[in-house]
Length: 147
Figure 1 (cartoon, one colour):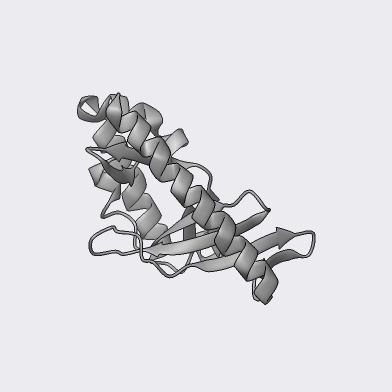
Figure 2 (cartoon, rainbow, N blue to C red):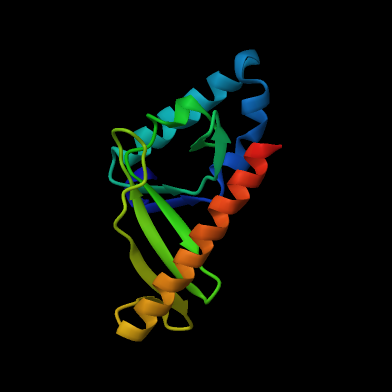
C-alpha cells in the first residue's frame, strides 16, 4: 500500500497530538516517537509528508507546539503568513538553528490556485502590509512582555 502513496497531509499535527504533550512523561512521548518513526518510514519509501503545526512562545522564542521532540523530527520547516490584503508570504526556517531566514516568497491564492506575486504594484503593497503587521506584532509582544 505504501508504494502507491505520494503525499500525506496532516492538518494539524499539533492539534492531533495535543493530548500527548500534557502526558508527555506518562506515555505521550512514546506515542509521539511511534508516530514520528511511522512518518519517517513512509517518507523513506518515497511519500512526501506535509504537516501543519503552530508555534508557541517558549522561553521567549518561537517553538513547535509539540516541543523538543519535533525539532529534530522534521527535515524542512516553512513559516506561512497571511497578510490582511489576501496576499501571503512564506519563509524558510533554518534547519540548523531554527531561526527564520529573512528572504520571503510572496504569493496569493485565487480561484486559479496559487500565484506568485511578481507584479511590482502587488509586491510593493504586499511588502507594505507585511511591514505594518510586523510593526504591530512587535507592539503586541511588548504589551504582553510588560504584564
